[in-house]
Image (cartoon, rainbow, N blue to C red; front, side):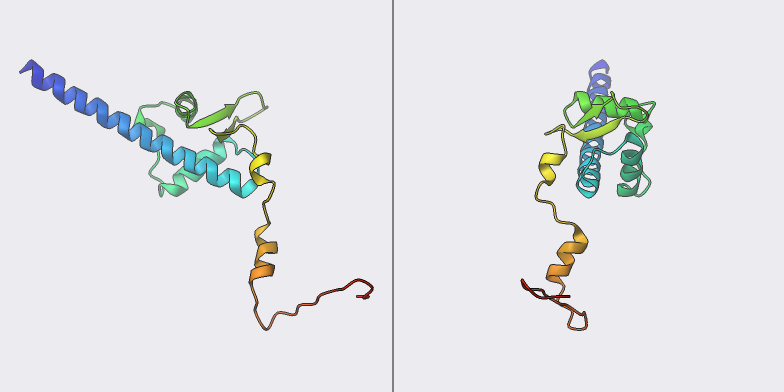
Length: 136
């Protein structure tokens, strides 16, 4: 009888670890999306809101065994999913795990509105081009 109880506890621990790993994965994707969109490391508050948006309001750090979101972030950083910048004033910044700086990943970034101007060939849109010596 005791062996069955221990087996059940082991399965329960494995399930909670899997849930925690999945939550860390959602965190990493949220940080990646926010970093790509803004070209800077987002704050913990921004990340928490993005995680709630991505999970349709279903994310709660208590569901994966943490009392506070900050504890969840610290555990994710310890596990290598994200990096934390606790030196900045106010809310901590959360970065991607593979790099601690965002600028190198965005050297070839093109603003979405500028890119749309190149690929959107709407015939009703007025376009003009200038050549050297031409006055506008």
